Length: 411
Image (tube, rainbow, N blue to C red; front, side, top):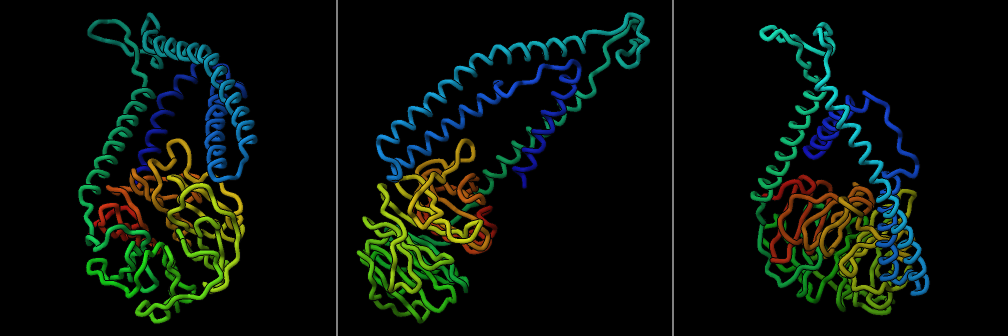
């Protein structure tokens, strides 16, 4: 809410300052090929180049198609940049006109000082003085308020991060996955097995050895499935005991799994994406990608079905067709993920994604199109989410809990 208020105040300030100026004399409108339009085309070309690179890395484009499309987008970007340079002349003329109008509005007044709309009378000196531009003064005040609001936002961010503290330091070398189950218990999969806790402070082994990369709970909560490096085990007694699952997967080097509306999805290294209703019978839904995969997450699609997300090769990819094709999902510009992506997690009930990178924790409510950085200090490598509750295991083995969707992190 504080960020939104700062943005609205800044916009109001700009309108209040500029509107009185542009009303004084009609300015020639920018054409469809004006500077603003060419800048949008330039940004669009850069975004398309980024998507092309992602498609090539994921194996969705051949080298020939990639080179041809890259050359076309580079030409498009170059032409847009050239037009932007030409448009600078027009923008300079507009800026000069606004400056001239502002100077005239402050300096001009009738000689007899009788016009209340333009001047006020200096009775002590007997001469007419320019009347202050009320709109400009008001606009400057609003702009000042906006600046103060932005400064307050950053101060608040610093306060939140200063108060951040872990609930525990986990007894493990490296976390792979984190989860909050339906009864509020916490789980962490790591190189040497599985940990569980009822309060996020005291942790105990969950009776399963092996390199656990993902933990999935069935829709009715009656069973759990642990997957990872040579790990595919099930528990039907709330994780007290585990037994190996007889399956038909081509291998069990599984890097990420999650529950979707159509079943359990798992990424098998060298084989691709598979789907199962029971963890026993699996069907291939997508080929392997060229990059190393660390985690998989699933959100419900807008038109039904499931949307898959992979943290692969330091970036984030999205697929709406079961993993057959992948597209860039790390956002763009100021709304993009920053740093190398370690992990991704989904909160399907809210349609929200969380991503952990070398630059912090991010949240998206637009299926990965836009991202917002959360006030978390550190590098998350495992994330779990259920409702407003979010948990993070960072690269230092610390475990954090937030009860307000990542807004604060206090024990």
